[in-house]
Length: 122
Image (cartoon, rainbow, N blue to C red):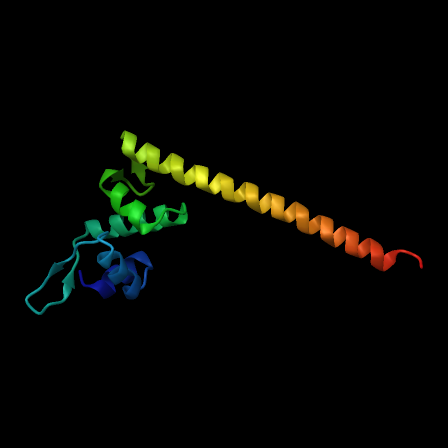
């Protein structure tokens, strides 16, 4: 199938599909006319890429993990390197969430203090 058909079947625009190719995530063949030609398995691969992106993984992480992905989940073969990558990404996300929570508490404190000054009798 050509890139337009893959785009229609996956809901991913052609520009993004070319980006996935540039990142080493998709490997289309080239026809005699130079057009990209994708096999039916590309639909599954794009689905896996999209789901892994939704999980917050970078295309670099996905390139590393994609060979171990199966199904539309995707399910990952639990080799130690993949587990380490997922744990590291989760640890970074947890740290970011903690930072955001502290920032939120601080902003609430400033807002509460400012609002008390506005409503305080003079």
